[in-house]
Amino acid sequence: LTDPPNPLTARVAVNPVWLRHSGMALVPRVLDFGKNGRRPVHPALLDWLAAEFRDSGWKMKPLHRLLVTSRTYRLAS
Image (cartoon, rainbow, N blue to C red):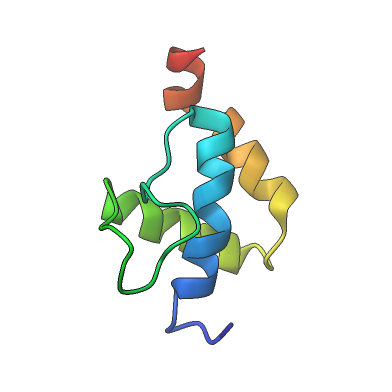
């Protein structure tokens, strides 16, 4: 599940964090990434955030910091 070429675990972890900070999930059905799930609204952003999360050692604090210090977050708040 945590194999670097397989981004699914990181995507599943990143999506609710994005939802918490932005108010809108990247994948509309936060808990369903399976066959019944829907496609990401911004797949490139989800993949990039998942890679950043994985590359930071699967640590949540750097992910939260990345999101709240982003230009998008500052403009929205």
